[in-house]
Image (cartoon, rainbow, N blue to C red; front, side):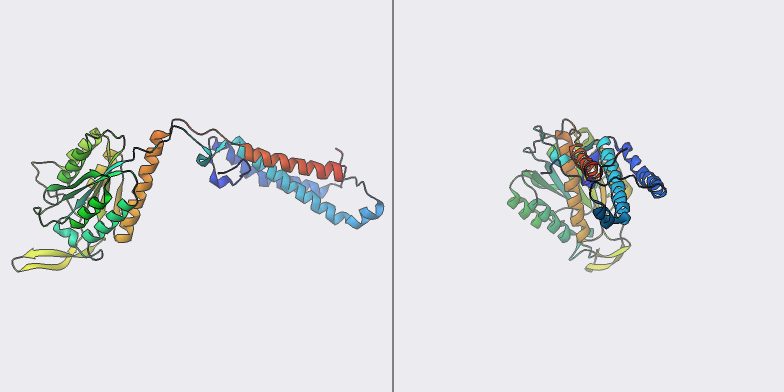
Length: 345
């Protein structure tokens, strides 16, 4: 817990940050005072003996003046920080902050044939599974579900707190039992349907795909599903999976499946639109590590949104630390000038 003696200003936020511009004036004011001090004779009266005064020497008097000048600058800076109304969230204890309800999340994963492309190790689908399981392991108290989709969508696991079962389902999903294609709209629509009857305030879909929508146009289009998510207050974070340029991808022929270099095509404008419509964000994953970082970023973003829902008021300004140190430095300077050297104005 930070105390009222912490003046690490970079750890604070400020309600009236416009006052901080005054900090820019301090060096100029100090420079003017310094030049003035150099041009005037000393006015310090020393209370010791003549021998002590000679031992001290005028050189030390000059140093004392310079030190005083620096302290004046520090005091001015501390007062400006106090005027800017600093506050720190770590010092704020709000009894309304309560996360016991957790978040409802549905991971909606593309399992179409193109997810077997080898620009991830060993391929996009297996890398996505491993990262999803790590994401699940990092949750606590959140109900998480799983939708697998290709040409059609399938509920692999409804939202649950049983993470062991969920991870088993993640391991087992594939596109073998689904028709070919990439029905993004159907996958998103089914995910929203799994969440819409839930009573929790925070409902999230993480939509992962590596291609363009190729679903049945007579069923649900991606933007229609996004509108449904928006109506149900479901945030959608979209992730485009695939390296830039080309990748070794599976191609089905009459002679079997073989791999050949194919261009990576992701409908990023549409994925961005889905995320924007629902209050989420779009991310691009070009390898397993970037996909892992995206999940971590989604976790941070969602936590921040939940905190914003629970904070009913802003923390009070807390300039005490800056005022405390300003007072101490002022007392030290006054003591040096008026008690030791008996300076008179």
